[in-house]
Image (tube, rainbow, N blue to C red; front, side, top):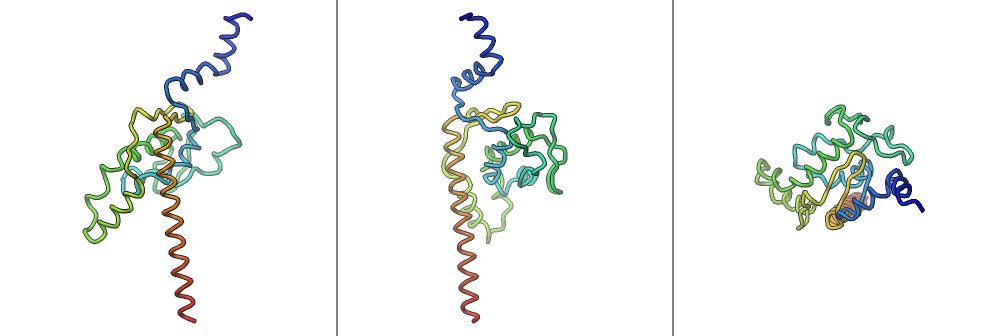
Length: 182
């Protein structure tokens, strides 16, 4: 075995970079598309930053396991989002919304709706915050430390359970009203 040749092959194949990233403590790696589509629902709904984010990435841009769209690929948006934003910029805005979840949202809410919105915001955030140093945004991937990934997954799980509970509540209400009308 030629040590120099093996090192060149490992470097070319990206193995050395993957080992370096894993050793620096970022074991979870998601493409920009996967990260955005998985955690978009966790964005603070009362934040002004969230209003700029599209709800989903158009199907035109989601191809079969093609490596993530680098900075040169732009995503088309609906009327509410900023046009021409790259996937990386969308992930940056999403991370900003996730980090600044407590800084906005409850100041301008009317007193009558304030308590329910605060409770709803608590469902979004949970008790733990994600440190800025625990997430790194690369050119084609988002790197997460284990603790940040666990926090995001628990938030996502709570959010899905809350959404399912709300849907079940509305369905049961509709069913009860239709039975009552008969």
